[in-house]
Image (tube, rainbow over all chains, first blue to last red; front, side, top):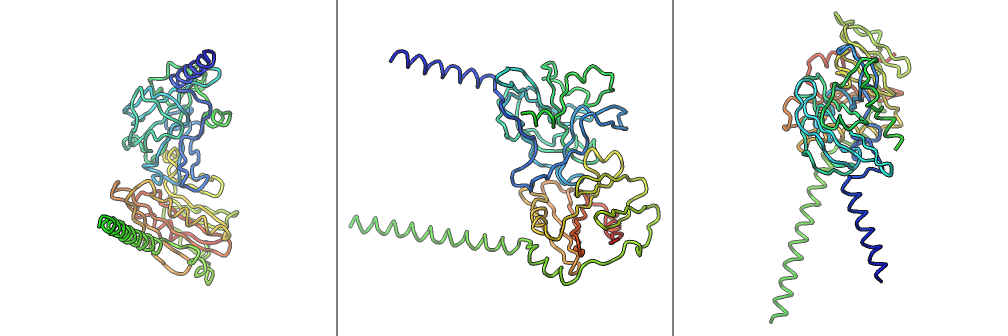
Length: 189
Length: 191
């Protein structure tokens, strides 16, 4: 009887601990309303793609539905369970940005996902979010860009939990070690 | 006496429920009637297909031709614009618009995929709770769909749906009002 009670308490404790670190077993794409036809979103600027406006290479992926502002105001969802570490307007070419930290189990490694150029933010720093939870709406970084899109990054370094970063980098920049190809990363999980 | 009162209360509740259901049914029926039914429209479209030849179109000043042999169409775009092809979608716009998907686009579907058109139309502006859809039958093979919202006053989606013998083409303006989009549509032709 006593043994069973201890086992139950142990299981309860483990569950609470796991919830505390906002575990992530599964990652899903960050946009893609289930009501929309399949394949509605496409990548308009790939990870590592050269951008002549910045004369640098892209540290994330830009996601779009249709052309230009067709997707303005579309819901943006968290790619996995996690904790919001940044949620504010970062100014300049960033606009509203949300960063969510995810702890990958069972390895307990940490990554963070960044959602940029949002029209609005629906979460706040310190808030736990679930996979598929709405965190904001797509925008154009307060009009900085001609067309609305989601700038999406996956970073594997916790020093980037609270900073949007540069968004672009030269090939020789050591920052590349901290960035993952978002599509490849999500496919792996 | 108490039983009679209870029965009366239950009966009143039932009547209210029936009236409520009837009201909901009428509302749903109305919404269905308002909905664009592409499957009925495609029958009309099959009577006559868009046959205007791209090579017969007048060349606009400072615009250039884009030809797509795979999907058998041609269209004109402003000279400084670039093109990006992604599966059955072709995007057009200035270079700096491409991180946002380009300004205008042509999406191409086979005639057998006509059901998808309905989905595409209903998903246009679905992010806005107050979306308003207007369908204009330009003729039996071209339809214009305008979707607007009061939530974002400068968001204005115009789409032309063109039925040809082999394909259905959707020309989109990227939800930004631009008078030159009419020229873009006007330059569309079959090759």
